[in-house]
Image: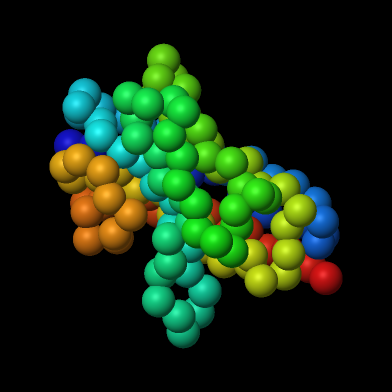
Length: 124
């Protein structure tokens, strides 16, 4: 089994920063990709960022967060991160980290392991 535990959410003012962490445990071998998604009430969960686990230089972002968010990972700690800068009220959401089932994709359907989510609230 694979477990993911997010941390680092909270309340921040617009323009501020937060760093989310996602600790991966259990059967962590052969992790192909990790991603962050977010969801607000009444809306579909949306892609935020993804990284190919074996390629530290790879990173993919939604247009809405490009230039403000940075995804990274620490292989030794089996942890993925999402550094969020210049936060905006529209970034308010529950953020989920996810591990791919197989290979790399930006599609939610390729991610079969999910954390419990962490709330990020950005006040104006």
